[in-house]
Length: 414
Image (tube, rainbow, N blue to C red; front, side):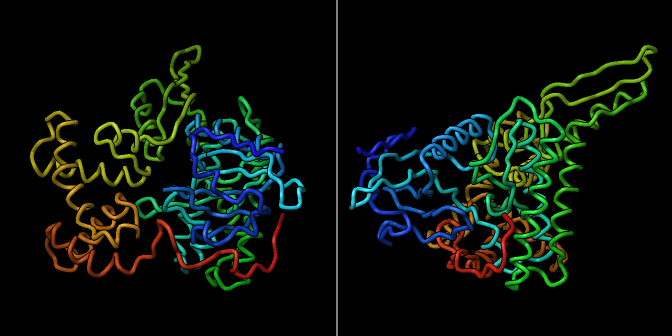
């Protein structure tokens, strides 16, 4: 059999990888030291040229199906890992066929949940983690994607201005439909409830879960958060004819949740005294798209919200609120954002991504000002942050120093 590599981006370095060796036996010289989550398949992070790739060894037909599914989800702008390629026709030294390999790009600054919990998450941080998963599930369901294996293990998390953004990793069991029925959504939620409770019980048994946290209550809280988001995004509201201002209020509320309203269905009853509003098309990323349009910065939704708030404060402080927004944004980028992110020493730049560092500098400035009883100059806050805070952060871009596969696993729900 001949080796067959299908990839959307030609990468000659792929040919240098030891495809004739079972993935679990690949030499360390090809591997990248990154934390791995729990998987039913063999998964390795691999260095390929300047890239870091995730390679998963699975059956040929499953690899093709998941590769195609991830490509479809990326086209729908769903938060998920980027598919890179599929390798078929592998044979071992003895001539026996080996399983195919699905290749995805490593999502920089992302962490599996077990690596996050190994850092002793505070209770409020753990809540934000679960909120991120609930929001991801809502977004997937809005696009008609039935996951079929909802779990923390199949999700990656990235810090997003103090919160987290969740990304789908494993689409192996997923199905894409024009629209999901309520039964399909509830089926996914039932799977989520059982899987997440089991994963949290593993963490509790290993001493990684907050002492008083109940795995079943935490799992149920994700489902509750999901229903709240789903209702806010898809529920109909009935307003009196004189309350049409509430249409704008509803849209603002959706924007605050990180969604845009692309189309509204507005109908009146026979008397014309009431209006029923149903968001027809909703999409996440309201703030991140606005920031991208104004500055070219492509960051997380919460990060974008924080940066836009600072941009608005800059416009107010410089008395430029009536000027063209794009011009003010360019000046803010040149005179505020870039000087801060470029001041980070080279050896510390892998600790957090630039937008998260900027957010933390703003937070640090606020705390310093609160202690001092007066405004702290941003330059002073930056110097103190670089000296006292950032050096203690783990290296999130590449190496965490903890392999989550080696953390004890007491029991698992499948």
